[in-house]
Figure 1 (cartoon, rainbow over the protein chains, first blue to last red):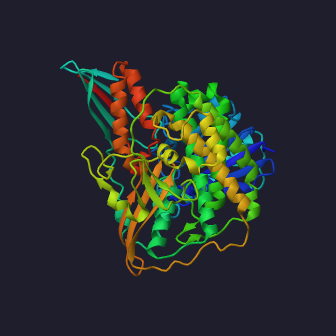
Figure 2: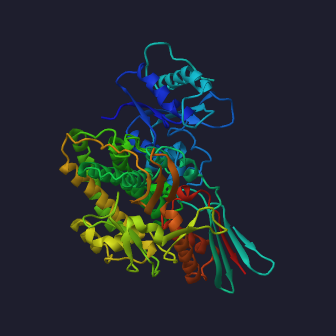
Figure 3: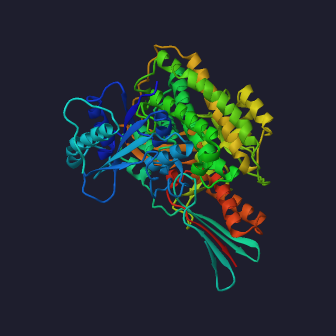
Length: 169
Length: 435
């Protein structure tokens, strides 16, 4: 049975800050109930199938946008939100599968009519993607990212337990 | 984008070739309706993998070379483990070979299902991308995603990861999956096989441009099965055949000015590796069910129309599902995951059939197992000359088409090869110049 809500940490566990998605998801696992499924995935092409039938999805992924490392930001991409902007696959829609990322998965799901109503992408600005451990900056941002995930779940009517859900700037 | 030149010629620019793995460029020059120059430009700087393998331990290439590509890591792992085991004089067990073949089935399923439906099918169904195609052909795209997931599941269980497997080592695996775990894959694989067989018939209904080339196909060959994770010899339609150990006597790499990926020749001539070559040289090794599906789809026992590679690739997709099921049905628990491999000074070659074609690795190690020399030859590098030959023929054959249509036809001709420029390198920029 598909869960009502899903929290997905995306990224490679071996590549420095790219592991942050799974690390945040693992922390969230401790504060959600049975109505929330928590997953860690490396391959964005699996997302469309993974969240099919789900009402609420919070996706956590590493991000490179030029802001300070460890910055946490949230973008909503559900059925009532605007399509995601420029991306090799989502915008041009023409990249190879190496270029298929979160935007590609969201927009393909939208085209297929399987995009969940609530989709929130919690992005954590990263500083290193080489093999090895996470940077201190990104590790220090995990609490804030967990709070952002809880806030997104709360906004979709999903309650979490433990510490009070925080908010994200 | 079309540019009119001062001498009356034209230059057509496409910023990036679409729906291939990685990025690269192409330049076609047409003068007085004659194609005078075709160049596949690959100008991504070399990635130096061969360089930084030197000085590393003989046990490291399966993990290091797997990182060359997120689409075909198992191809690299299989070729490198075989090369090292050959050097060290070790033969693994039949069970380890079976499990390697199952892992390779997972990679073929992942890669073929992506290319067939998400990158190649839009060419034949008239869409710019799978995102547009999905609106009208949701059932096909959903099937593709299901098939891809089956490949991911096999890779995760056997390889430990869906993208860059971590369970492969020289000598075998770190851990064998249990029979219970493997049997758990069966329902999805059974459905996948039926879907793939139906897809063979679906893609056979596409409208294929009429174009054939007299390719010299080259592929691995094994006396007992269709080549995936290894072969015993390399064969060519030219009639040449030889043990894998002699590949460097026949395939020579060389540099051309317009590509940072080395070109290659086979006995001094261009050649073709990939599904069309495998199929044409190993049709007799396909399962009866896949042979029947291929013939029903209108293929002969060989195929020389590169645009029909999508049918051949789909036949291979079905075969990978069938093989995965066969291996699971054979499996029993209790087998050692690996055999010990002690270092031994020497030089050796390993080869496997990546989704895009034959890949081979050559290593030289010292008595302590330190790598002294490494050579990695992926399929896209070997196919560059054939890709250029196809582009030349396609551009000439359809020279009277308008620039937009001709450009699209040329891009599709490249996609027939499912090139992985990320393996050979990156970046493609398409230019057609008329004068």
